[in-house]
Length: 167
Image (cartoon, rainbow, N blue to C red):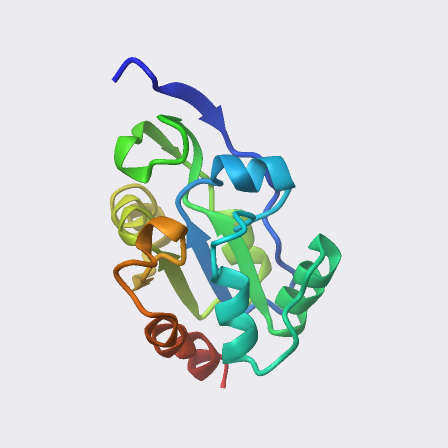
């Protein structure tokens, strides 16, 4: 794979002292980096699914999304700090380097860690679990590449566990 490029993580984690769940993707996509925030691809349904799970209006701006996360006690980041990757293809990831999740876990009341997609789950188990000692709950990816595998309603059903954990 000669098209691999080194990519460092683009965004800071979103959390505060009241965060009770942590959602981790693998690495921001090219579209997310261009838009300047997590799950920024126009066909990624992450924000749509969470808005439906929590029965709220879809947050549109970066500020609205951050306010949504904090209101619902959700921390958001990614498993990887850097890697070599071809475009946005998680399947191409080489030389993954994990983010240090411990500052978030120490500063919050995190009760559960959710990973979005198979790659995020696999990388979390390999790179982060040995440090955090917290099992992750794997959720399906909301990326356009995975939409063919899950109907929107199925994604919402899977993501309802986040609200259940929060009570």
